[in-house]
Length: 469
Ligand code: FCB
Image 1 (cartoon, helix red, strand yellow):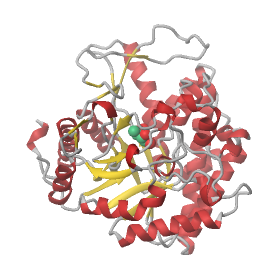
Image 2 (spheres, protein in one colour):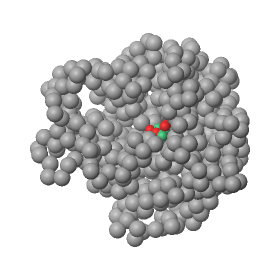
Image 3 (cartoon, protein in one colour):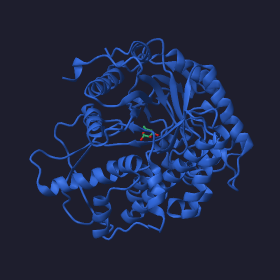
Image 4 (cartoon, protein in one colour):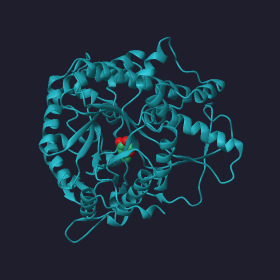
């Protein structure tokens, strides 16, 4: 069915998603402070694949001008990256002029290359000194983020049109505080939700600052603000029990509806908050918070899509750490996996979630802000000329997702564009350079030089013709 629509609208945009901490490098350059990734790299470099820590990014800090030109030649018109809080502000929370000048130059180079630079303010990269003060659990840090956002809007308000407060605000609560995958490796469900709540307030405070500065003229009149999350369409087994459906409700509630309600209604979903309270998870709500959250309504949304989530009723009410359990993973027998990353490939999920947004949040405009496939480097074949032969897996992945997007648009979804994650290979947290997402290779053995992969020509064709073939 999905292959019936193979053309995207003429004004649909194509671009590349990336982030400051994964690309810039120069981790101590221009007065940059230590961030969470530098802290973890400095604490235990063995935690990173091949011991490649946060330090180098993909050398984009030195190469952004050529990178933007290359992306433009591929037919892309926009790029999303992030400012690093640890580069833009100093340890007193004041503008770091050197860091600001770096971003001014990057914005100018993007413009020169014909690329619209979308700016996100936070991509899992809190300055380490603020983490030591309690991170998102401390209201002063939430306030410090609002100051950072305000400073960025004031400094770049005439240069940037598309702003985002956070990338994937669900990820730090889960990876750092719930599943203990990332430094500081905590297994505490309640703390994870407190962190999630702190981030929600920080988001709303930033939107509020944006609106105030836009009204005063400091931010361009045509500027927009949004939030980006990795939404996961939730599924359960066939013929589900009420308990399976309950597991879906809470998973969807924490991962998806929490953010969708925040950015469209300026409030958190009450059914989710009530269920949390019944299970002893209370949020650190203070008088006045409701009014703060009410400011969190955005102009549009970014939908990062990699995989669905499949759940069933939990076997036990609590886990081995005493945390409440709302769902167990459900292994769908038909799942197709990207074995390199351990993520399910399910292109239809992008359509299902698009239609959910169209139905439940009909006013909301959005774009696909990340989508991509990372394959382990040693599996990537090179031809005689050294060109990476990736078309057999990268082209079908992107094509199938785009076709489902085209169908959703045809059925009324307000999807305006598509950004592929990591068009240029980049550093991926503790996986470092294990999995390669790019249409453009970054060769670590060759001084980070860039080389087009086999699939690059396909991307150029689709991005310039809007025909998904
Ligand atoms: C997403 C992150 C992004 C990148 C991709 C592969 O969850 O937003 O930074 O690491 O995964």
